[in-house]
Image (tube, rainbow, N blue to C red):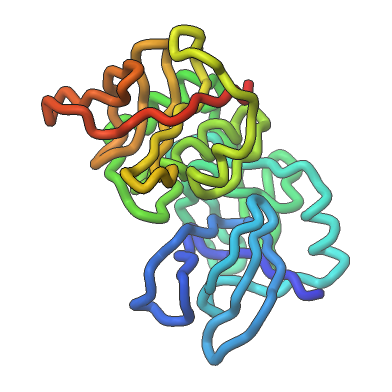
Length: 252
């Protein structure tokens, strides 16, 4: 079994082994994965964090020894809690800007290490409060496959915010809907519940975070707050219902 670790701030995870292929997710700095297959300048991987599969460029990661791979997979991850964190690469004194949610392998409170490169990171940031974290993403543009404040999709947003509370969500909305416990009525919804929405074919295609039983924060065009009722989301900026409510789940 071979392992790798991302050594760039944000690497696109693609559906196929080509730069023109659809970006289905992102691998953030310090995140580990199992290598499943090689193809020219690409490798097919399965991420450790959420078990997602896709292709990553060979020049956006480094290999891990089996010992380091197993150690990092089993260890409790330290992640950045600021929108942007400055990491100083000690080998060349350059700066790497890490996004919220990047993982710091072998972090000791001041340094982390990937391969032979040491990174100085004196602070991981303080976005830990659930509501503060959720609101920090407001106005972030929607980006299919995105997971950061620079662009995020609906399920990537839910995943990033709940991760700060120790909850590991799967990557896609329809997969996330299989987790958690059912909230029987919208009137019983509370802060932190996830609401899921389906398309005309009945497939769950959207997720948002409940702020209370009448409002929801979600990524649709941008991260924004909308009104929700038993019919679904009413988007004030579009003056219409945009998403049909399917189910509400509780995770916290």
